[in-house]
Image (cartoon, rainbow, N blue to C red):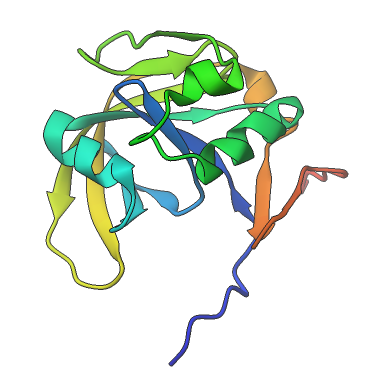
Length: 162
């Protein structure tokens, strides 16, 4: 069976590892207690090397207004360039992680201790235990949604079931 992306849109996050970061749509919460996320990283990605080396990462959520540099960061390699410097992104130290920096403009940050799960396929899987959470209610209002390929959107209408 060939891949089909009928499950999009997906909430685009920014995965920070050390000084490097990349946009990430393939993530999901998998446990409330203990609080954990599952991340899927392309096996050709520089971030995979860093995750294995450092064992920590931060999953950040930025507002729609920051979409240009968030998306652009996925087209730059952390092997060749300091993305924060190249894109003009201000970083700050994470609260509980030793070597990872997070974007100052993040509206929500989940700091993770990560371990790789044995898997095959073109993406490596990492289970991340949440060590620290910080955030604002604003994080839910104008998310960056990945529609697939090079297309993005944000929320235009909301509804609450009563």
